[in-house]
Length: 409
Image (cartoon, rainbow, N blue to C red):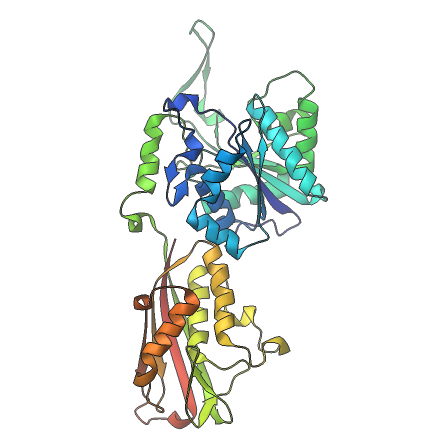
């Protein structure tokens, strides 16, 4: 399931990356360090694009830091594919201020300049050095913010907490059950959090995070269960997490989904027989609303099932005239672009076509190459087999196709 604000509000993202990373001690800005196919920052952006329906992301950067930030973001090939498949997505950069508070304020103002109806938006404010965000955590936080107006994820401290004074003397013994360690994303009604920041910028107080500002000017803040994996990269030892995420055997970190697709059509005179996008000479063809390509229809359903995006009927309803005699290659390509935009890759595709006539083998390699071209994958990741009906049932007047796929991300 995709995190979305379907109840009433859309979602925009504000990523804070205007700090100097002084605690890393390496002289390299932590958000620009290598991770996965790009950088820590590009990985954060990919997570939100893959896990939400948001089309607007603003990144706060150091003064004169936009060129470096753009390089850290747009040189990631996986992110390039996401953006190519979703041209409506906007990623913009704005210079931060002298503190996190002022940087967030700048980012909120930038977002509001591009959103005419800010009262219809939530803003998710997230640390640019926190790349291990999960789909589930985003969903929990967004859903709760939709109800309450202001939400953050948090964890109960694992160690006993004390309050001390400037001399290091304990002044209070705190109960862990009454404490929570704050994470991001913190999600708010955009209009209200911007107004609260406007007021906070004039009151001469210094706030540690955005929930404190909301609490002062807007009211209560709710929390949801955080994620222990959702760490913020702060010290050099935290880089071990990046190393594990970007190890030389990426399959250890992949999410794997399988999909199953099936389709069947009658064979009738006066129609073309099309399989895998290839027209096969025969006296009969598939009786379907589109071109009837049972193989591509089965493949499309398998891919949609593995990615959790629906089924072919929901994308291309047979009762709609728009899809009459449609080219199934174009239908598959439309679906595949949406699937890859969510970060999925095809590991392999295995198919079976069941028909009595004509003979399938002479066309198999051509069909495999046609499918691999539509999906833009190597031909050796696709295979198609054929079976006959052994002259049982109504074998002369029907054709079936089965497809299984393995997707990863």
